Length: 212
Picture (cartoon, rainbow, N blue to C red):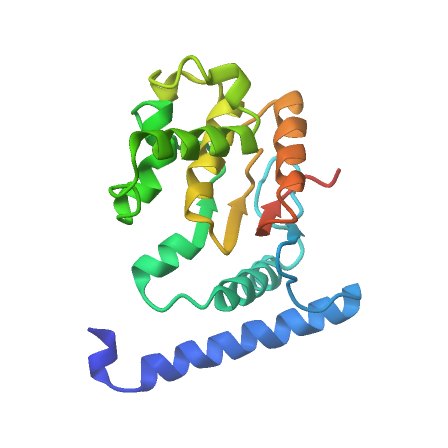
C-alpha cells in the first residue's frame, strides 16, 4: 500500500492537484471564464496533426488543462467513497460500450450494482427505463424492442444507450471522452444535440477534437 510508506505519496498528489488547479485558473483567465458551472457543459478541444491523433504543440499542457476542468467538476460532486464516486461521476467513452444484455437491463444496470433497483416495483423499473430512453431520444424507436440485445443497435444508438445507462443514478458530473469519434456525420450531429439538451440538468465535461 503506497499510503503505508509515509506521507510522500499524499503530498505528491496534493502538489499535483494544486498544479492542475493553478494551470486551469491561468487557462480560464485567458479565456474569460472561471470555474465549472453546475449543470453546464465544458468542452476541451484538442488539435490533431495530420495522420496523428496526438495533441500537437504542447500536449502535456493541454491534457493538464482538461484534467483540471475534470478535477474541479469531480471535486464539486463531493463523493465520500469509491462507490459514491462511481455513482456521482458518469463516463462516456470514445467507442460505445453497451453490455451484451437487453436494452432494458442496460438502462437498469447502474441502479442494480448500486443497490437502488431492488426495492422498486416492476412498474417503477419500467418507468425508469422509459424516462431514460426518452431523455436520449431512443424510446420511440426501441420501445417495442426493449429485450433486444443492445449490441445489435447502431453505433449512434449504442452511444445514446450508454448515456441513458448513467441517467437513473442522477450523476453530478458526466465525463465524455470524444463521445462522437466512432460515429458518422449524421450520428455525430444527433448525439451532440442530445448532449446540449442535457446542459440544464447535468455538469458535462467533454474532450473533443471536433473544431466545428
